[in-house]
Length: 514
Image (spheres, rainbow, N blue to C red):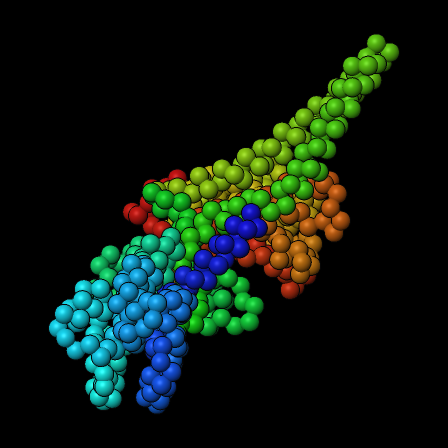
């Protein structure tokens, strides 16, 4: 897995550089020319002539050395004398054209042979041009300049074609934006993610953030304040598409890299839906299984072993006591397994066609509070809540309220909290639900981890805290799937915490009441 991860990282780096290159391809400033001549005076003459033009020069004294250096350098042009011992320029040219790596390298043959047959023979073997000795220096420079420029543009087009193939066929979305947030380029996957036309020639009228806002919500909002720059060790940026009638919630991680072109950025969109779900479900799971699920099994096993070995010697009261201990362990295990199953199936409770009338919240909260034995549960809200519906089913709201109240009860010193619930409609077409209790004040570490599945806030993990640590993670799972947000913070007027949920509003004609 380590090797695979390293390969993936290298591949990502290459892709990013590829897209950065699409934003501003730059030609190499100088061309490399290989001079092949067995006569030192011929090499010196060409060196003086071409060095003044700024070319990078390499030299070979015969055909064999020429083939070796050409393979090592892949020069932009070869200037080669025809008449050489062992292997003449014609044969070298023929061998180069048979080599896939050298077949496209331009060759100018320099020859004293001025007959038509020799020129035709050289052209048939793959020479690009001829210069006859003694040559005119201005004419030679003109031909060299023309061929090197054509070859560099050919290489540029070839490299661009390779780059575009990589980018066009990747699973990630890539865009290039300028400092005004205008989209200069978007590969097919990015166009798919943003709902853009597949035609690459069609101009993209809206800035990136406006395009993203049509389908996605920005998470966390604070990480987007400096867009596109990312300050220090900022949190990762995500675009989240809420649950729809045909798809679950969808997450894209958004990374930004400087492009090679001035004042532009490469934006990578990566599907992180599965990773987000895995992180939500698996963090701390192994520790929790080891402690929470084994504890009732051990209690059950020990009670049953005593009954199996010593039942004949026990009184009826002792047998009943052992049986009750085993039963309590079974019930505890069943409750913990039910918690896990409930958490895993919670997203299915977010049905796009369902909604909940907030006017029903007071009665529902009091009913759940009474079921839990809580005497001080109060609900307040604005009058317009009678017409307000949130994008959650009644079953989902009931589950959320129960989990929040159970959590308040569990962590209150006397397990008898006072809970104040308020609901208000916001101008952003959202409802804010606020649950304030008078229990414990949490540490910064606990506040940072409360939404983490299987986290229970113990200083030293014992596995004895009630429940599975899935109550608040279940709440944020439901709220997030509906396109909302969740926040938890300490009260500033005394001990206790506030759970604040923001959920989109819908109206009765838009969705059926669930």
